[in-house]
Length: 165
Length: 170
Image (cartoon, rainbow over all chains, first blue to last red; front, side, top):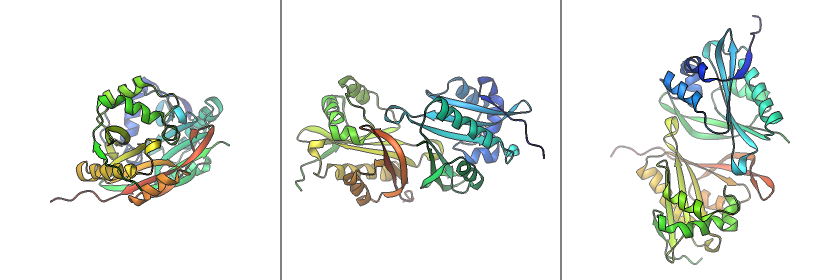
């Protein structure tokens, strides 16, 4: 299978419909922090009014946003750090989109924003994501027990970080 | 250990001056996420504008608020969880106030709010606090490296949590 032609750019308010489809895809929904039945209006509001110190990237293939990555900056005594979240639409998994987004967000964070600690959380059964993060230098720092409710059961999540010395 | 009479209650707007003194205490400032030069205006605003997601218990000793415990409730898939913080004014340390606040807050969290996970961050070298949390069933889940700035150094912090199965039907 030839590699995908992936473009990384900012996530825009006009991406709301694609963003909604992405986060409602069953695996993407359950593997992130999201609730089911994410609405297009919620997507529109979220993209139109992002929180402060928040950056969102889109991965575009064939004109559609099929992956996204967010970076939320820390404040006050944590201005050196950023929290990362990634989702890839179920039908585009395993084709390098996660890697493209990680490379882009790490570049933004470290080379342009000067961050020295990047952190994220990942469910312990999400082997593919854990492998991606480790490939990009993230290390598991610990495990949060009963971190979130997922399809009727409380599940654990690792917290991982990449430190720029 | 001298254990004074401690009253646990809600904080009130009239606690503003004591709230300011608490946040200004050097050890409290260093060991939490507070910045130096905390203002009275900020103290008053925090007491006046408490979000519903934030539960607060104050510890009163000798007629003054000398400690607080906060719990930030989770949302969505994390409604069973809360993020806890404690402050005890430097000159009231070692008198059982943190212990009383923790008992009060774990009771509130688990027996009245139905939480099954209480988590917190604590600097790795804050042995007094770590000991107190362990006494109340908190377990170290891992170490967050270079977690926050403190007096010129990015210091490591443990993530600790107390996990209980939720309340049952009567």
